Length: 273
Image (cartoon, rainbow, N blue to C red; front, side, top):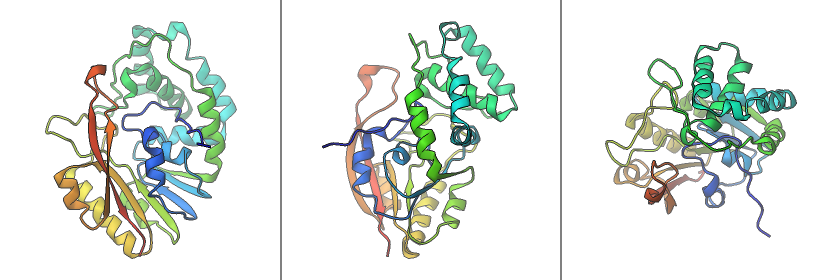
């Protein structure tokens, strides 16, 4: 019997929901799964490790996860009040976006973060150079309120620790019998393919290369590491020490639905030595 996959409560560019079964084939058993780039958490939600160490450089995302972990009932009840017809209008969206950018209270920011995610264009999470969330209104008929997904995340998160630090720091903290899954911002397929970072800090080609080096060092220290990325000549070069597996996947973001072709992605596996 095929086990049903669990969806993340956030819409997320580059989310791994559709690749979970392929990723599971390459993730070894361990005491703990470490994710330096957790994103919406599809791998976390669809694997079964005793413990998780989940990190993201996006502070709003991690604060949201911690709040749901600690006070799911209150959060879900309050968030539901934003999923009404009067809030699903462009003027309302822009007002809430402005409120989010001025808000200092973590709990209120977390409520607005979910609202913006579900009402904004294509589930994008994007900030300008001043750190202001700037995704336009999505114009959806009736945005979905992910109540069941929120409750599942809250339950699963009881075996997780959340961090907001650099990927380098997560590698420095590795312990024996921990496996690492890395889903970094992907290498652009062309010079015009990338968009403004979803955190103020960008992820450069130097970061891509450094991540591969950290994976090699972790492998030698006895940890397995799996990295996903676009399958390009350059990624194959930096992952030359890894076992490489290629799959074709549909693009998850395109302004025109009929323009969503397939692109090759690579899984770079560094099995523990």
